[in-house]
Length: 276
Ligand code: HPA
Image 1 (cartoon, rainbow, N blue to C red):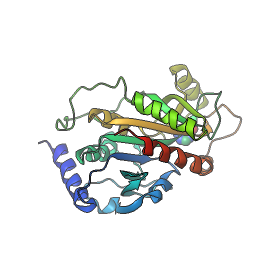
Image 2: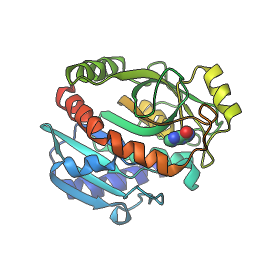
Image 3: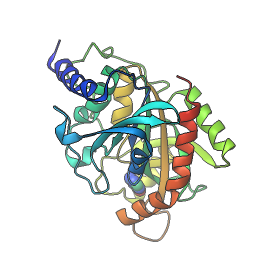
């Protein structure tokens, strides 16, 4: 075993001891303002990131930093309430670590959510978007370095990084509860600066519908480990340059807050219908 594999195993052993033996079906990584989902779990077991050996610690406002295991719509889920970002100074492989631990715990399904800037001018703040694919022009990669072979192959396919069946499931669920659900491409920017208007135009030319500062590293790690991924973005604001007003983080949090109940309803529906 290489060093990475040993670390993943040590951390997952600790978590397994804390959460008992019943298998967890779905892991969830929740973005800005959406961490409230963690409070929706029944019979929760909460582990503070600080107390988990080898686990990174989150620094951003609005991200609590706890791993909550419990039941949602009858499924056993593990929620990362508080995620790690590249802009915090974490390396990409640090962002991959929790996902690799989840896989090592036997979890095969990952739901990721995030706040994103809306690049598609036909859409509006507050819209939810199923991620169909992503663009990462940052040259760094979370799997750079020695390959943790117990998790996956050195070179791995990304041609359906966001599972087609899960995307269809999300649309079905949205239809059933009467929510408009967009589908589109998410482009990663490193942050913490928001994009410039020129960068947003560039993203649109690339084919992106949304821009954001998270998710992609975790999704790459999940694909490496053979997990099935569903990603949903909340368009918290029109991306820079589209409207004649500056962007701020407060707006991101406020829109997240306004959309919260709709978002939770959708996630509940999806988790309930999730075909394991
Ligand atoms: N850009 C990047 N990340 C974001 C944005 C944005 O406009 N809004 C929320 N997260």
